[in-house]
Image 1 (spheres, rainbow, N blue to C red):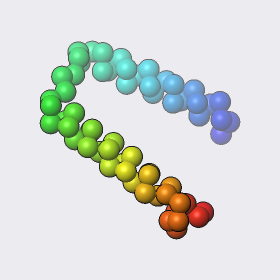
Image 2: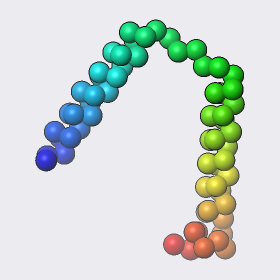
Image 3: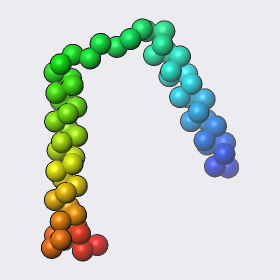
Length: 61
């Protein structure tokens, strides 16, 4: 499969998903979902910082 075809398929699917999302109307995010997302990204950030600290096994690779 040619890379451009693969990209075209992704763009087509993204267009379909945007159309479906637009048809459903705006999504109201509950505060608990925002809190979970924020906590999740904070944990990712902490993990990345720990993994790239000098002297750690992950930073040596």
